[in-house]
Image (cartoon, rainbow, N blue to C red; front, side, top):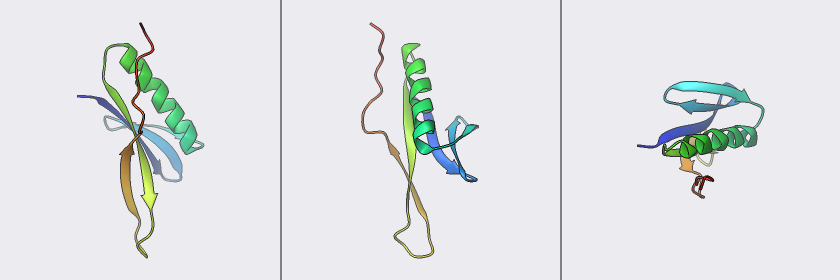
Length: 81
């Protein structure tokens, strides 16, 4: 089972959630994704499986906000040889 690092907008700030623990807030979504990819790569380099999941919001339905999570499209790979 992979460790999931979820990026989500909470209370006006971008947070990273891992196993129920919240880290942040980060000043931007990009900053949170960068940090999550960094720690996911660290986990992978230490023999674990990890993935980063980013919140996407869609507001096409009036008066409702639908939230979906998508996995970053490029896989995180180990840089060790």
